[in-house]
Image 1 (tube, one colour):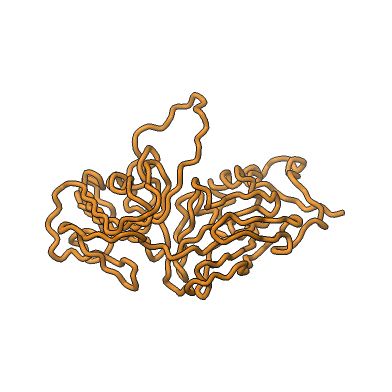
Image 2 (tube, helix red, strand yellow):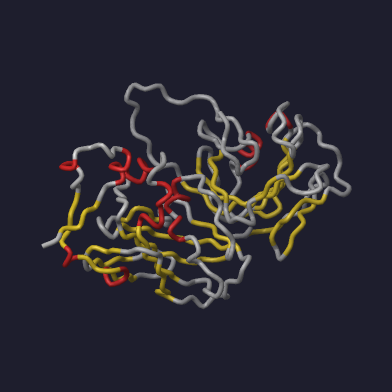
Amino acid sequence: MLLRLRRPTTLLLTALLPASLALAACGSDDSELKGFDAVSISGKVGETPKLDWKGTMTAEAAKSKVVTKGDGAALKDGDIVKVEFTLADGWTHKVTYDSYQDTKLSRVVRIGAKAADPTSLSDVLALGLDGQIKAGQTIGSRIAVTVGSDKAFGNYFGSQAASLLADLDIGNEDGMLYVADIVGLAKPEGATQAAPAWAPKVVEKDGIPTGLDFTGVPAPNGQLRVAVLTKGTGPVVKSGQETILNYVGQLAKGKKPFDESFTRGGFTAVLGGAQASVVKGWSQGLVGQTVGSRVILEIPPSLGYGNKAQGTDIPANSTLYFVVDVLDTAKPEPTPAPTGAASPSGSTSAPASPSATPSQ
């Protein structure tokens, strides 16, 4: 009987290992089933799905099906939607990621747009969903996707993220199963509040922020100012938590935004704490806000980029203005006890804009 070779991810980083060490796990061909033949999916939309495995799942190019059709509005190009998803490995049958857990983030997708570059492990693990949440599908639907791990994560098996995939026991020949619930539009939800006089007006197109209007806005006062335009009804964002947001950033004298995330879907960042991945003004202004909120930030240079210019769009000593939607947050994973190594201290310095790679 022929045996199927499954190479664990770590072997991609140690190609010179003896061949005898490459046979990490094998399964018989007669136990392998293609795609959805290998599993049945049950359970309610809005809850972690129940998976009944019938054998080892193989998969190549992504294939999707509607498990449950929702009775909500049909999605259209340009919509920004929140998706809860569960990822399971068809080889090990382990649930690798479940966004219904309070330590995990959901996924925010702009229909018809290219996904943003991953900025977190959760972003990487969601790659197999790219292009599978589409116009015409309805809110409240449950979608299932099968895809080979090499198709979903192929660009990452040869990168530093390979060790992270290996830690999750994802091999480079595994069939992966996504079960994704389209729970609603990703937008502010809560009581609206009047903007203060210092805050610029949010310019929108089809309900999505595209810029800021500074007509009649007074000069900045050198302090951090925070205005809550919508008070969300979700969990409070705490320091050190990973959070999904959408934003537009603009200077008072800028003719257009210097950066934004709405056209790409959600942006994942850590707010506050030693691992903060954004400017201090973001952490100070957004920690303590609630999911579902829309917030205006006026960030002085001392809490932004100081006397350092950021490219050609942000001069030195600039006051930064942002409109930010807080879409989801996750509790940090428990950390193992120290083993004698020094713990990190201080704060991470800010990126040139919230969607850029943090500088150290």
